[in-house]
Length: 172
Image (cartoon, rainbow, N blue to C red):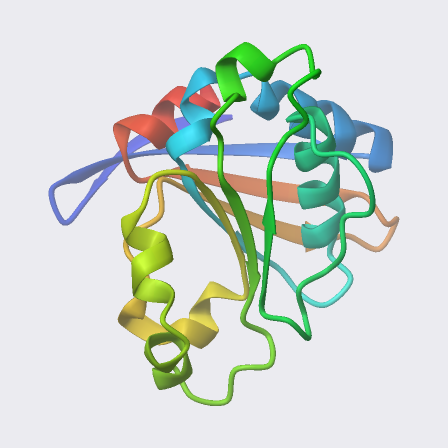
């Protein structure tokens, strides 16, 4: 289901999908990785513990050509990644910088500012942010918000909200 809405004069695209299993999560991540707009996107991921945010990020990063272990940045707060030059999408992503943030352990939104993240967010690259609400209003507006909700049967209902042209392009 796709809706076109307006909130505070900013057009939004809202799309709801279901991931019945991890294979569907992986298929979505790989499709997202093939979008040219991914390289400059700010994507926020919301959902309860265990909803699948980090799983989605792992599949997305693998789809972008990141090799090796992809760790959750829960304790480090941020993990930087660079895709392998030999990846099939390397011509598209050859200079891609990727940062995976997890603000779960933040107790105060001011920790975002104190950590110096403003510089990272001001530079080009893909930023993936878990627990964005813990950073308060310090984060810029995302291009795409992915909200994951786990159902009783372990499937996921995913609400995708595009807040920019980049976000809309990612949903195309």
